[in-house]
Amino acid sequence: MVLPWDFDVSYKLNGVPTDGDKLAGANGLIEINVKATPNDNADLYYRNNMMLMVTVPVDMSKCYSVDADGAQIQSLGSTTAAVFSALPGKKEIIPSVLVQTALKLPV
Image 1 (tube, rainbow, N blue to C red):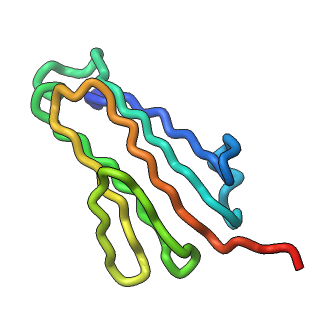
Image 2: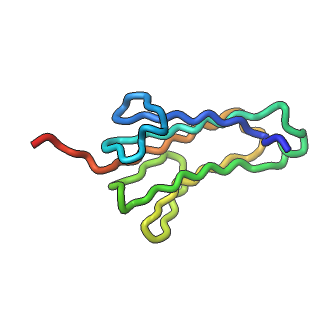
Image 3: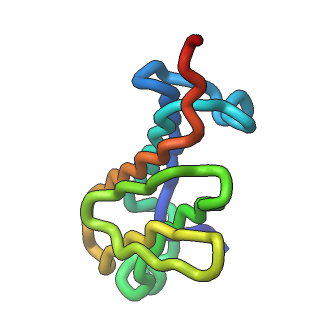
């Protein structure tokens, strides 16, 4: 089965584009962007009937805040998730999540 959406995920650390594998343990403002576009190679049934949901879970024991315009924010224990959804036929979705991690200030 071919998914009805194509995804391109990008990251920034303190406003600077960064590879996702370099974010583990990073301090500062992390921005996660998920660009979702319809996949014309997917079966027509799936393109017309599958709803898109993008969820970004965040461990709040390691972060101070989560901000995501247009998202539904869900909390369960120490995890907060930004949840985005879109109905079939939407041409493009670019949800953005901002996560503030521990910021080490100079002494």
